[in-house]
Image (cartoon, one colour):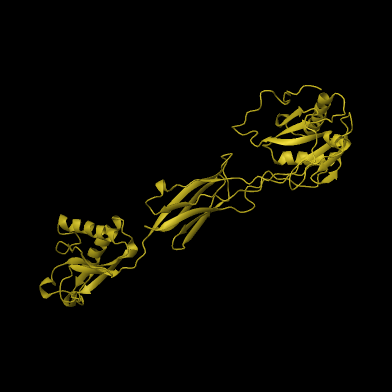
Length: 398
């Protein structure tokens, strides 16, 4: 067992006990010039630096800065000397919370021969301090595809001890999170995206009863940045790329009378509607999804005349209707497939083709189909096809 000799001997050593061994840490002493708060020599100044190094190596220590004075004597000089040492340690990046000052009764704490000497000693007050460092992490939140900033995204930093701090990205996607970090602790940075973030303003057009959106928000970033403070968080910057959730919508179906461009039946999803309602809903969808480009494919049945020209005329009719309602023609492409792609009835479970009466197949084949070509119209990477709004067909006429 180690006995406490601090009351009878000048304090020179402190004992740090662990389960495995006893470590003796020798604390320096700081001597001062007579009646002064100036260290006696350069060696005493170096002793302050040595004490700072000891505290950095032992970040859980809380240290007492001890000065000695006779009972009932003026302690002004002692206070000045302790303040000098404390200020020097703080300047060497020791947290003020880890430093306490204590004026001890020299008649009790020191041997008689040392009672007239003015010096500072150090002793351990606690060994369970959790060192926290005020620091800042910055970054930017942006759309993975468009590179545009994403605002109002919550950025969370969660420590391995359960601590958490959060902030949100601004209009430019930038965020700045200030928090107290514990040296050596592991942290994770993650995003929390609200359902409403990333949704475009709803678009409703004409007789269409529905409202359409460009996208339905963003997915949370699958990459959770993990770092140990402060070693592995390079430059304290973390940029977040979010993937948009794109919702695929139903597109209209238009069926035509035989040998004609007159619309016979118009469907949206599983419901039959007027051709005006279907066109208006299609316009609403394209207005909401302003980066889409569309191919309008014209088809004819095997029993029709001038199949290639007729199929193209049907596609061109829908093209013209969309342009007349404000859709940019550069986003629309039309093409004739003649009768090369007859309508197919398929089994829902096996997807095998079901044979039907040729008359029914012909009625269903007189149609246009809609397909999405791209989702980056108007973005920097977009290049319009060289052939313009009409896609050249390689199909020969009947």
